[in-house]
Image (cartoon, rainbow, N blue to C red; front, side):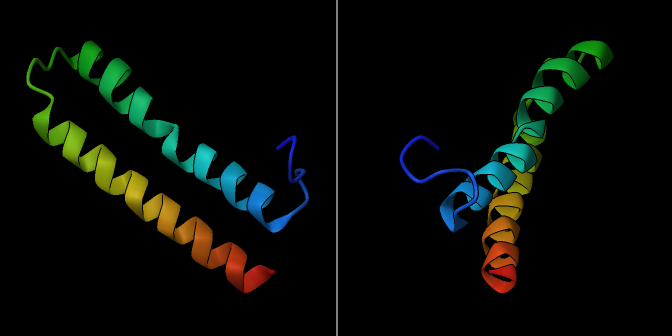
Length: 66
């Protein structure tokens, strides 16, 4: 953000990616801890697929809007 700024295309894409991939930590740490899940293999795969979709959507949406 210091190099390119927040209002540039790169700044907007990275901000959206950071917001969409933040749920990985919540999913693995909080949700599995509350429910008591010991094996997080499937939760990890679901979270990583969600991250990939979030990153891909972010890039596509900001490319269209820019």
